[in-house]
Amino acid sequence: MDAADIEKDLTKVHYTEDQILAKLRELAARIEQDYEGKDLLMVGVLRGAVMVMADLARSFRRHVEMDWMAISSYGSGTKSSGVVRIQKDLDTDITNRHVLIVEDIIDTGLTLSWLVSNLESRKPASLELCTAFMKPDAAKMRVPVKYVGLELPDEFVVGYGLDYAEKYRNLRCVATLAPHVYS
Ligand SMILES: O=P(O)(O)OC[C@H]1O[C@H](OP(=O)(O)OP(=O)(O)O)[C@H](O)[C@@H]1O
Ligand code: HPA
Image (tube, rainbow, N blue to C red; front, side):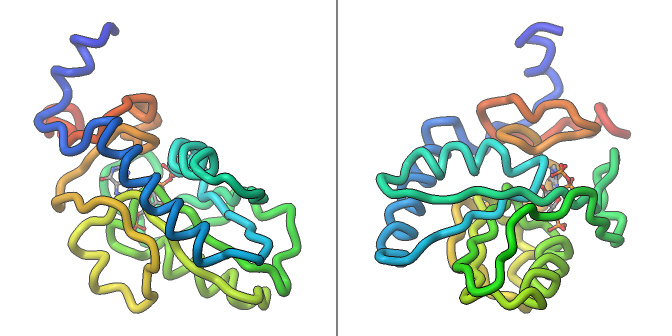
């Protein structure tokens, strides 16, 4: 499949790579300021957050630690299954640590709500959330998200880490996936 074939699967590009990187640099500057003088552990949520974590972390001029959790609620479909499962836990003990969860997207908010209560039970010194993208339903979430990047409509999107059935994660932009691909 070449680039032109992939483009046929997309209906609208919402953000280009440059727009995404510019927003992440803004978030990184705020995070750097807020965590001045504190050790910071960023927890990335596999697999979608790989790109966000890599670009965010490289925007810092300070040390950060990174660890990863793999949890899944979407399987290979376009709707949340409603059931969150841990597939890989953290390697780090987060007790008394300043933890920042890094996500690619908050859609229904189910994954993050679940993750926050799971990580809070481990007694970190602080726990905050950062997401590159957010859909409208996420506003209904009870957990506040301190660092929010870019807004997306309530459509199934792919690219910049976001997949459909494990494909499209490597697109540099974020775009709506044409319904003919999954219906
Ligand atoms: O707000 P929600 O409706 O819960 O959706 C957000 C979650 O869905 C995606 O993960 P997914 O389960 O698809 O796993 P992946 O990161 O491996 O793609 C995404 O990376 C978020 O973790
Ligand atoms: O729109 C989406 N695309 C890809 N993965 C997702 N996980 C939650 N929402 C989405």
